[in-house]
Length: 384
Ligand SMILES: Cc1cc2nc3c(=O)[nH]c(=O)nc-3n(C[C@H](O)[C@H](O)[C@H](O)COP(=O)(O)OP(=O)(O)OC[C@H]3O[C@@H](n4cnc5c(N)ncnc54)[C@H](O)[C@@H]3O)c2cc1C
Image (cartoon, rainbow, N blue to C red; front, side, top):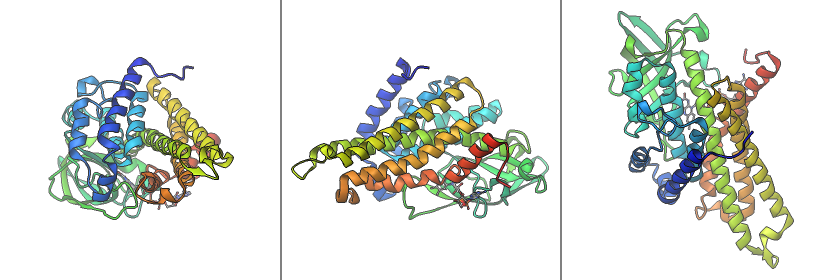
């Protein structure tokens, strides 16, 4: 067991950290206010190879491992959760899923532009009436010769409105439950395939979220991702990847909240001394440090299993469950350290507080992670 990053991983960390400090952290507040995703910064990240860190070299990536993937997510989470979210969706949910399930033609067509920051992908699983119970989706794909005709709505989809390629799940056989679901890659501009943005979110305001509307969208059978009827497995493998980078992003945000707290605690004087010298403030700091370290170790373990290519759903869900709750605790504690000042836009904690809330909700709620972990311990599914 080695708790150190290797030289390659350290180089990625240093490069991304430097980029985040210069290009992301100073601007994240304004992007949040404007509800505007910084396309120019994203393109720079693509040029520098940050987006494609964990994509194989033959698809215009850097071919690095899962720990490097987590490092990028952590560093982005330190500066801006909206940027981290876009990284997770483009790389973890879309590009890596196409790499795992796609034909060579699909990989060549869709993955390189995403890795280079020239194209956006989205992942459409959730619907207005099915979230946790994803297999309860109503969207259908009816076969018509060499085509499938897609109908239904997808709700809360990150990048819905800006995606060049959408990975959507629909039922090709309504009577077969999860085994009747199939994945499709739908291109922007396909007739009958539109998006509607969702505004006034609590957090992740710099990131596009919307609804996908499929109203008789015809897609060729070559746009199927993976075999017919294997869509649920495709969807779950995507979540295995995305939960990993969500967890790593939580660590970055929590680390940022801790760093702000430490600086403030050493400067703020109350009762004649810096508040850092008051025992209960040290208790808050100590709790934050331990929380962050525990989360980081869970991410490392899941990443190591992913590097080995062995099943890791249980470990990834443990990381997602812990880190999603942890970042909310840590940001809450950081706000205690800063007192009333944390409640204003003067410090980024108010944005972190809003942005962090999503992490116990999406990619499966904390309760759903607990059910997956419970099932793996007991061998008894509690979903039905
Ligand atoms: C900003 C944002 C971005 C998102 N991005 C995407 C995206 O890109 N793609 C995508 O497909 N989806 C996306 N989602 C959707 C997200 O993954 C879902 O909201 C999430 O899975 C929960 O589904 P739900 O909201 O329908 O809640 P529900 O499933 O209705 O759950 C409501 C509550 O019931 C609980 N519950 C449900 N079933 C059980 C059970 N069996 N046992 C115990 N408790 C249960 C849940 O834990 C939760 O507490 C996004 C959501 C948001 C808010």
